[in-house]
Image 1: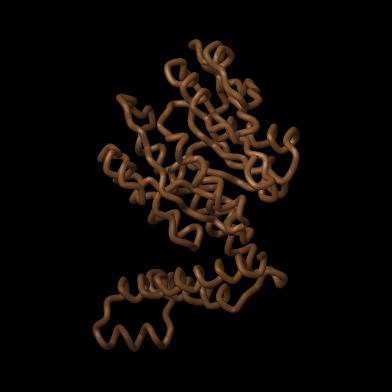
Image 2: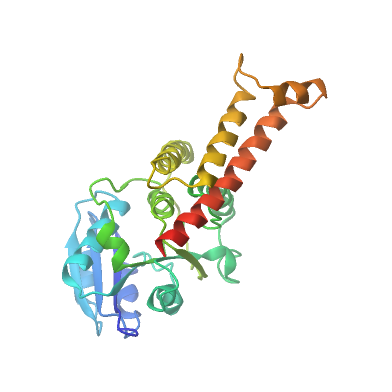
Length: 309
């Protein structure tokens, strides 16, 4: 327990027999509950977890290979049902790539009331980004750019799975609709932003060994990209309802529509016609309006965050 908050750690694990014991046994003593979610492992992951020693309460759940997103949701819901409030539910991977020494920094902003959700940022850590494989750096940069657009706030390391979430957020989360596949962390960021929750980012180390990712780039980026585009539009459309409406959202919508009008044939306005006469390429006009839409969207996100606080 920390400053009146119970601390839980959810550990999704699939075929992590080499690392799971170390993950459990190196957790700090202030952790009250660790929930290992065995996601269909066909090795000795569950046995090694059962044999591990830890001063905190240890629970092992079966998730039947439904995926890491489903495993994390399963763990969070167990914590929500069994741990006294207020609490903080953190997520650490079962592959040993997260430093337990960083857990205090990850949960502290919630304990002190500064944030509702905390996300690790490997880019901000001297031993995080530099050790990241080149392919992951590129993927992180691309996904960071698009997650920033979709969420309306700056996100440097969207795929970092080292997170902490307050009991207030978990109580209000729509578990039936929660995204379970690739892009799980991106989905969370966009929907936390939509609901005005405060997101903090803290530097965390990432420990890389000889693991290779089994994710195929094209299907991954296609599926995650489509999901983020849908969630981005759902977020903004939800804010057009009278009870959620702010001037910034209206300005963002206007700029967004003007951006599209620069590209769609047969649609133009006096401003675009004047710019065309002056030799300004329509592609620049469209990009400019979309940039302004994003700026207004960021203002709307800040407004919703302040209203919730």
